[in-house]
Amino acid sequence: MINAQSKTQTFVQLNNGSAVEVLNQDALYRSEAVIQETTTQFLKLLWEWSARLPGSQQNDPGFTFNLNDQQKTIPSSVYYASQLTGGGIGNQLVIESLKIIPHSVFEGRAESSIEIEFLGSPRVTGQGLYEIDAIATVVVREVGYLDQRTQLKKTFTWQAVEPYVPLLPLDNPSSMRQLIAQLRASGLQLVDVKPFNP
Image (tube, rainbow, N blue to C red; front, top):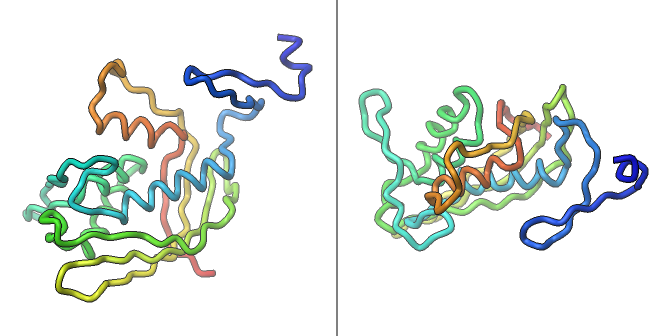
């Protein structure tokens, strides 16, 4: 232990054979790269959808739920993105996404992509709280229609939390459990979204 503390750099070898540098940091510390990568991954899950499940060639049946006594269906990726949120913010984002998701996405006749034009440097705003600004354009392509473009200018507030540890063993986990574990591995949870006025 004394030897480890006296070294300026400490490396550990992971199970996959790669080596990483270990830094002595506060448990609520998240690097700029981790916050930016989590934000990018979140935006892509929330605003990029097609007829396929994320990361596979399987058809996406979508996630169906009731809203105001009406049945609604969203792409599974949008549901996955909501798993990175705290409180009721996930539900708010799902309702917002319903405004631009065409139902023909489930028939393979529509898809979307997000073009991230600006991703700022994270700012510490409290204990374990990080704000990051983003400007992006969501492009919805639907057969027989001109592209629909929606610009997003948002400030996201992430809170550092304990990284996700599945309760069940990871022997042959479902693809959904795998994806949620990967998303939550950063130990960040979205707690607020507000307009960004550059």
